[in-house]
Image (cartoon, rainbow, N blue to C red; front, side, top):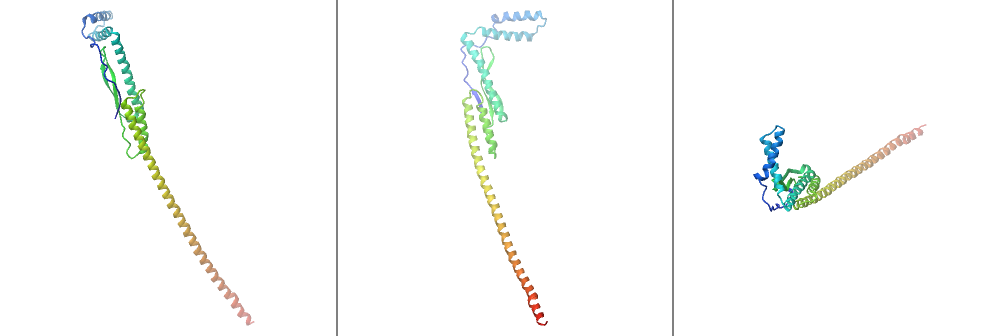
Amino acid sequence: MNIHSVMPSIPTRFAPPPTTSTASVEPTVKETAAETASTTESSTATESRAAARATATAAVKTLTPDELATLQFLKQRDTEVRAHEQAHIAAGGRYITSTASYDYQTGADGVRYAIGGEVGIDTSPVAGNPAATLDKARTVRQAALAPAEPSGQDLQVAAAATTMETNAAQDLRTLAQLQQKQQEAELAQFRAAQTSAAEQDASSKTTADIDLTARNQLTERIAAFFTGAAFGNINQFA
């Protein structure tokens, strides 16, 4: 999905800047030639650049106040658009999928000015990881709303990110509930195992006590037989 700022092309009520007007260009070219002659470094490239600058300067000088205002607006718009897209990129971080691309309009000075632009951003959820999806959705929304004046498309991306965040949060709650139920089941199973073990221990102890009592009783009977009856018979023969 793209997040961008776009505005219609600005209508120009004036013709493009002159390109080969001898009347407006020649004086400046002569001045440039004189300056280069005094430095002894005259070249065709230098003259061409000087001519281009002179052409642009001459074109601007011939504009009406309204036309100059339009040109100033184009310059301001170019600055705003570039700042707008850079704000998206700075906030989007690793989820930005493409660099900024711009729509241009040529001004009366022959310069192309950006009047709209966009950057690509990944708005897909992270498969199988609602926690990562939640963080990603928040970053995407921040990126969409990063510029001072978000566009309509920016607001749509932010809304989609909010929906993704809501769904991820719900998935996290569901996962937490499942984990809690699993923990409760495991705890119940552990307690049942402890109870069973305790009951087995108690049963074993009871059986052992019974066996011990029986052995003690048998021992007492045997002892009584030898100490009581036997010694009584001996006394009779004394």
